[in-house]
Image 1 (cartoon, rainbow, N blue to C red):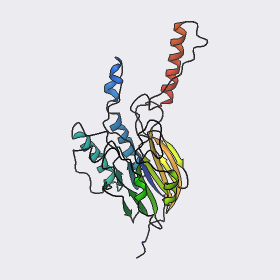
Image 2 (spheres, rainbow, N blue to C red):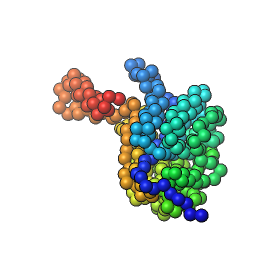
Image 3 (cartoon, rainbow, N blue to C red):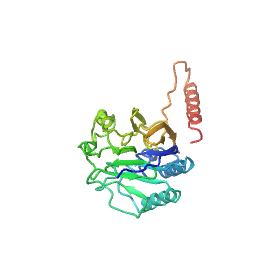
Image 4 (cartoon, rainbow, N blue to C red):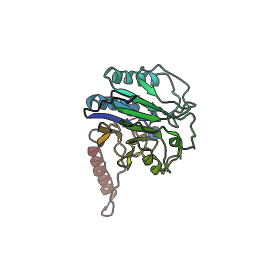
Length: 292
């Protein structure tokens, strides 16, 4: 029987990855004056911003492409916070689909918490498809069963669903990315040839639009966790109508911004000149962070 798709209006979905909820921002305790307590909850606040984005944009769907958690929870409050935030989305009619990555693989997270019924975690034993008739969207994906996945998971992803916007969730380093373990390796051409309209990738913490039409996108992580994760962090907002994508936009959601400040010293005549240049550089970086 042919499906009847809801395609009469422009709709939105949000793509996020690598939330690492309750991950400690590393290295701060080594510095006496670091504002550790102020930013200890940065990953939770960034996730709160993600929920707010979905509600403000009236998104129909949130997809999360792995590493929602950093590892097994220190206590159950991490899971309870996650469930409470997702309940806000479900009450507003936002559907949520997520997969596990290397940090929150089935073998890594031993605790559990009851999630809202409308929140879908895709299987880890095989790739699967969830079709949302009311949205005209088909979501394909597979969670990590174990941390070290070295096979090409995408090779066994289902065929595209005709007439729908097909979204593939995949936690991968593709053919390799600097600073990231080569998990679930695959070729960009293989993803493109699968025929999906949008590949929602995770694992790489730097935002990158790898390919357009069809889109293959790393949204980057939601919140930078240390001084090597510099710059704006957030999620990707996708606007679509039927099976056609109209816009793919980055939205900043981080609450703590890391920056590398280069201080020119060629013209400095004294230590005070160097300190003054450093102060000016820091002031510019703080202004660019827009209140973070």
